[in-house]
Image 1: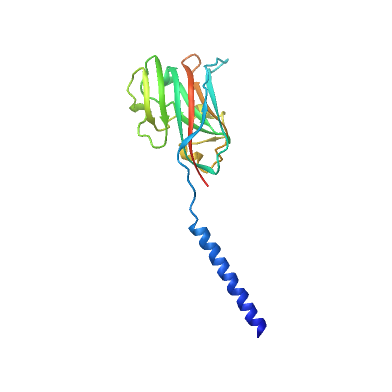
Image 2: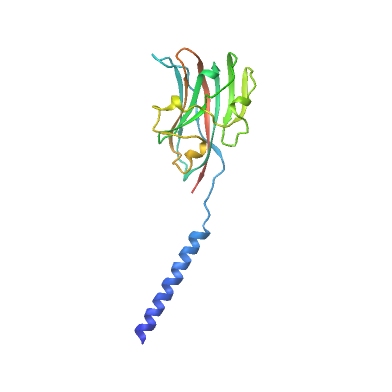
Length: 197
């Protein structure tokens, strides 16, 4: 009889501890940090190669806890022949997001860019009216074709980076579509990252 009572007591204690553990897991909410600057590049000048010229600016992110919850990119640059340039963001895990490059309008000569690229928009690249400066917040709307070979996985929006480790070297990559057709100088590039853990 004592053995039966002892067994029942052990079972009850086990059930209580299991239910408490489940309740703790259910009630635990993820900690989400606000969107904030995670790294800035000092910029990159245009470099000529035998085929395509390009500018690459590296942004090193370190010390962030958790996984990516949201990501945005700010670019300050001078470009010429914007409709002949492709912009990409390459992650530390070698994923690539086309940022700009699909334009139906012809652009003027030298343009100063100070833009934010975000899944929230509200602007599309063709909402920009032709002028010598380009400002505002734009959806990523690049062309994937020229990105193959630069990284191992193509993404279609910033949400594709979600749940990845944010730490490591990110690269903003600008390349001309046709040799000798355009020019770009990255003045600065800044990543804004929100994490969750």
